[in-house]
Length: 324
Image 1 (cartoon, rainbow, N blue to C red):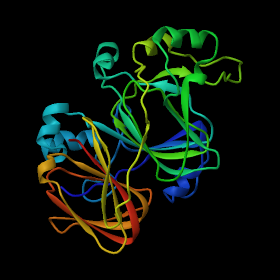
Image 2: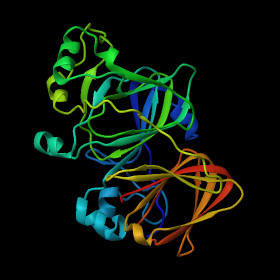
Image 3: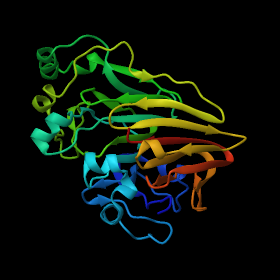
Image 4: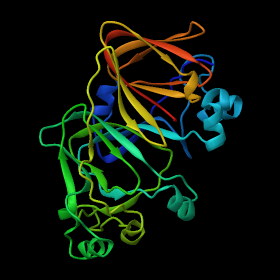
């Protein structure tokens, strides 16, 4: 096997914009693209390889063909024939609904699905853009239900002003939403289970409000008031900084300007995904296969490739993520 690229799955939405096509240098540029699913094993949205001799093969076919060689033995044992991460870009020109995701246990019981822990890396943010994540003051389950009745729930949700490079970890149970003018990379568990809590009283063209999942969300919300919801980290020029470490994925930021870095993946026993945020680089595997990665591109390195070297061709920032 070799490092793989996939054809992006572009999602047209009412709240989408033009940032994704510009960022990924897609021509012609399309309007109202809200999401680009970079690597997906969600039913009816399965990624297809776009480079090399495996071009045209779906991610599902690759797993059937290569199993642990692609996923890693521990990943295959844990998740079977399911690719456990969904990699996205999201461009929000309007506030997305405030929502929450159930944990693995609740999602399994209700939907026969994984839960949905995720993280965001802010690629860019317009002036006054914000994210919603966590609570600004204490709230109980009964107070939550009451706030939905009297339309005061937004008073409890914490708003965060944004800058490029901000990171937010969003475990299951945490209320959250991406605000207008925000462009992010998202790494999440492979799941499409979402409970919509609040939709800013919006109506469709027929005057109808979207369905809210008030009661389903009640048992899924983590009502704990945490001291901090934003992830702090320090840039590491010509090195890497740890961003998120959780049971579902670990994510680092590789920042390379003058020389490359070698990544030893033997002990990971997992595939590794690289998502280019800035600049460009060449990923070289142990078999002498070289693959360029440009801003806006995503590369999947199979678990069987024990080492890769990443050499910048322009000063670059690359998100690296894998299964712990």
